[in-house]
Image 1 (cartoon, rainbow, N blue to C red):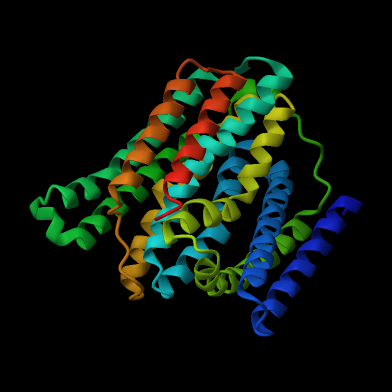
Image 2 (cartoon, helix red, strand yellow; image 1 turned 45 degrees about the vertical axis):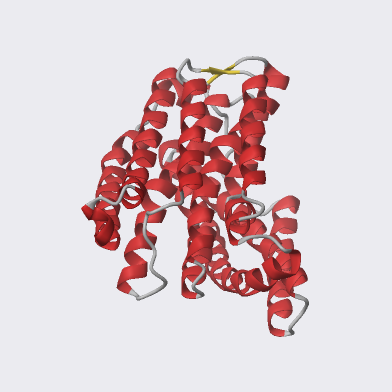
Length: 352
């Protein structure tokens, strides 16, 4: 059943959600309301990840990675939908790109640094690493085509919403085709890889906490977005930086924590897989779903056309991550290089 640490997390989550609701409805200072809502989202994301981990111990490691990434992205999905409803489409584009950059550069870099300093050169699993990175390269390449068509003024530029819809359907199909590989059991990793403790929670409790956390994340995400715009005005940060850094990190708390913890414990292959599952699902699922939802429900026009800086940042991040991963090994210095690039890219968007 619940341990003391589990009870503390649940109690802390409930307290932060209550505080976020109070801040929203009582008209607290927008910056305070924003910070409290961001903390609540991060803790709810952690509870989602913990619930999925308990379910994964029952259903198998392959399904756990996919399920953890999918449900771990729920808070970000809610944030993006409410942001589109508020007309903050630039924040959404920056948040999606920022989530990919945060995982490919910041979180992966931290995992390499922590794991490398504690365990030396880390093995990433050559075959699985190459397949994951190739899939990431393909999905990001698909994102750049609508942007390229827009900036070189091809005939497709006059139909960017329809073109983005077509690309979205193709990416969702590619994700469906990738599922058998993602769910495949790797006998070597299963036997010698991460050692999980037996599930502490019964299935009904894990599903219950998962459902409550997901529902609470929907409400808190709305309050988060309501406080976002006045906070940007108060602090003086741009929509691009808010989406690229603040929203992206708050919406990816699960991968931020889990990936580094796995690397620290010596499970570098599993950490690499978990960290990269999230950006792959953002590129192949979350962004296409938002394109479709925005058109079906008449939200702010959302397409896959990105600014040149976002496109270049994405390509640089994917190419660097691929270069590091293709030999199947990583060092702490390579991790530091990833973090350095993330810091430079984030700083370049401070002014917009």
